Length: 294
Image (cartoon, rainbow, N blue to C red; front, side, top):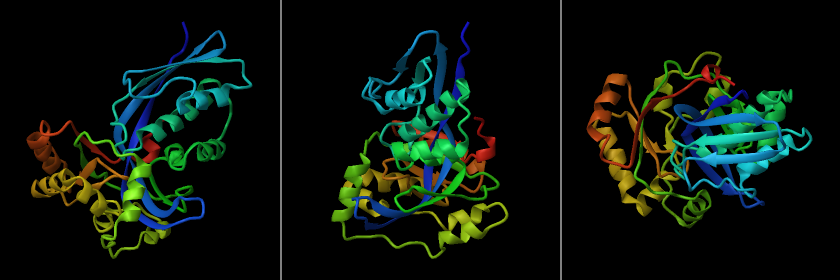
């Protein structure tokens, strides 16, 4: 019987996202703090005796054919191995939600195939491969708490947040393509004010990041733009704050809103009130890199 490797493909939130000017290649310069959270898709990887790549997913909206990035990623790693693989993706992270599910899937497949077939690629090598597949994919190789700059390809792992932050994720069922979100941002003249605290502060820290520091950092340049386009986002933010969230904003370009709570009891009480109000409401927390098993 073949060995099936089961991996968790974690979602992320942006604790901070500042969009800078557009670069010559069309991308924007960004400064962001990305953080893995305890919401994940499941990937099942099974080696087969014949060459070939067979991919299935429980969500029909996820492309799995030969032109899909999931297929091409597996094909690239297995090109010179004469190996074959079956992949099943159990999708739990909402699509086009700002939680990075697609990028996380690609990074997790890289990690999984490397482990399953003993390709002996170290983390640095996997990160280089990931950078050629997508800008935020390298983050999902590193995971935990990470500061990213440039187009998002400059990765600086930070000290973990301790204790973990209790969170609620709320998605109103709206899919927002990232490219379109940046187009809206470029057309907007209403840019929200940045927090006073500079994120470069975290690069110098030698001890764990305290939750109170994060409360003062939370910011997203897309927030004011997406609120104008989708008023429901502001409604969700206000609702979370009314129910005890210290801060609430969108992750990535949205549409998922996350609320940060000081205590789990407050989060759980909020969850019990709103869990049936929107298509996706999830109770979770931040996850440290060392707690994520490769």
